[in-house]
Image 1 (cartoon, helix red, strand yellow):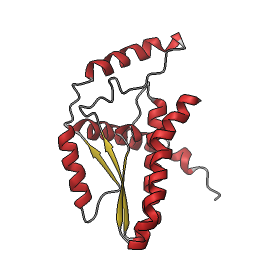
Image 2 (cartoon, rainbow, N blue to C red; image 1 turned 120 degrees about the vertical axis):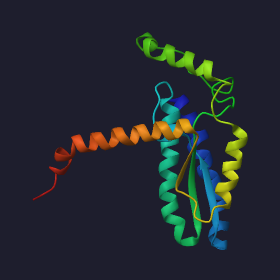
Image 3 (cartoon, one colour; image 1 turned 45 degrees about the vertical axis):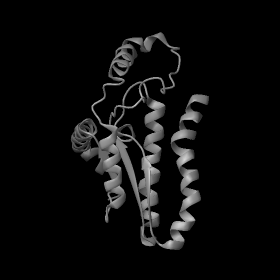
Image 4 (cartoon, one colour; image 1 turned 90 degrees about the horizontal axis):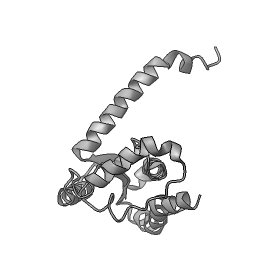
Length: 180
């Protein structure tokens, strides 16, 4: 629980505290743009980082709802969701929870090894991400969500396809719950 609380403190409670600090001034000016850095992990999921994904999902939801709440004040909210960029995210800056259940080793060992191998070799260029952020800041009609990176777009597209297929497969049961 302590690990989960730390993850949410960094990825949800911190951004919310910042929003609470800047939003009154933005409301007064009737303009502003809040950009919350989420992650492709805030839309797709990856085994081994469930607390991270959960916290980024939370920030995605808060961002989307807040955007609807403040739009009439001229304030925009964007969830900026990068994929893998050549930063230290998967290296020394990653806080790893010690293993505690051997049953998961067959699933987690290859994922941990791949993540360590990718560290320093991620496909995204941080300088290009910074340029994309500046373009987002200058946008007259910024998106609610902006995915950065080929990997993010590909994985999100795959998830959307699976979601459409699953919704379609279960549509009859979903619709069967109405009165009439």
